Length: 194
Image 1: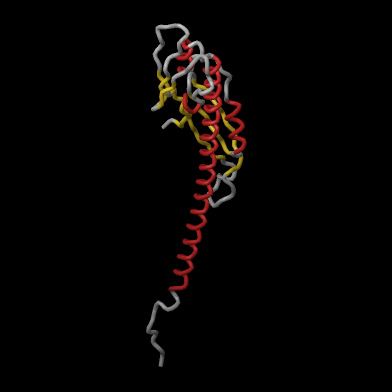
Image 2: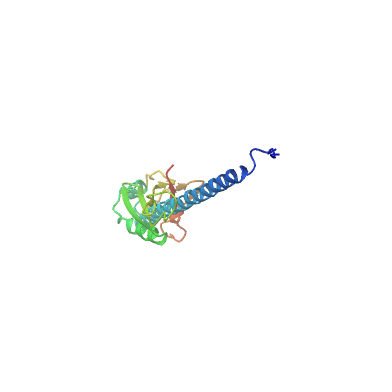
């Protein structure tokens, strides 16, 4: 007498199990590759942001120094606040900060008060299951803006300095005692453009 098999699908679960586990492993490796690329991309964005801000902060400090130098001549103040004075190009600071973040930067000053940086990571995305990514480098873009914070009105009397209003603070400047002057962060704000 022949024995009838009760379960005609006996043993079929194992290949399905192997296929599912193999697929899950592939997905895990693919997610790892995507995560690796995202980390590299975040590194590029950090480098671009830091580089653009560094260039803008350096220019802000130079503008503030120029204002301190010309503090007794308020007719020059507006040109300084508008960035219509000659200051050195600060892209060298962008290069420094990008290098500290393991990237290269291409900095573009946009007169009067902006710096744009395109950064590229030195590290590649690396080996992954995604073909062609081994030599890819992440790139990012950032723009930093220098915004003047102060307003004033020229006085009608010579030898008198105008009152300077920077954000919510008023600065009454005495030409005979210039020890309490606003700092660069009082005169200008530096931030990333949206």
